[in-house]
Image (cartoon, rainbow, N blue to C red; front, side, top):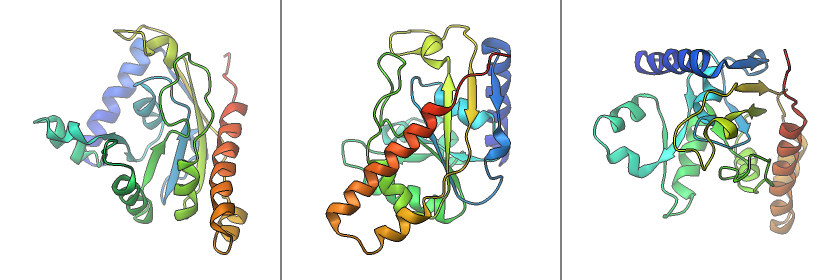
Amino acid sequence: MNFSYRLGWHFFRALFKLYFRWRAYNPERVPTEGPVILAANHASFIDPPLVGAGLPRLINYLARESLFHVPVLAAILRSWKVVPVDRDAGTGRGLKTILQRLAQGGAIILFPEGTRSKDGNLQPARSGIGLTVIKSKAPVVPVRVFGTFEAYGRNNKFPRPRQLQVKYGKPLLFAQERAEAETCTKERLKQIYQEIADKIMSEISALEPRKD
């Protein structure tokens, strides 16, 4: 972590502790160095910093490219190594940057569902994360957040003090899928992308909240 990121990390950890009474479970399952994809469910704007706050390493977040044109904020985002994503221009450049960060040994958060849940329930996975997995060599750690929809869902104008949890699953390697992808047809490759996405979403779904 650089100085700027560490300040933000401590800020969010304090916020989650004092306002949301948060709990983080099994963060030791996430590699402390080397490339890793953190694949989490998505119900709120709170999700990215919540996932990152439980881990003692710098995490590459994604943010709309338009935010990089806002003075001061842009400097902060760059110092945190946030990946700019232009949804209107497609995903090509964003994917290239994500793969570069992973190749450099970075950790990145991706949301298999693609967008925030409208009702707090898990949504079907999109194939995009499968493509990222195949084009990288990074392990995938399924992550599930609990309580963020109730705290700050789509219909909330201000975050409410609900208890939050983040639970990290066991790493998935997808060695077999990566090997098959090297020689299979384009039609089969598309199927592999979706199968990987569905497998990740299944592992996220299997993570249960703790009641202690």
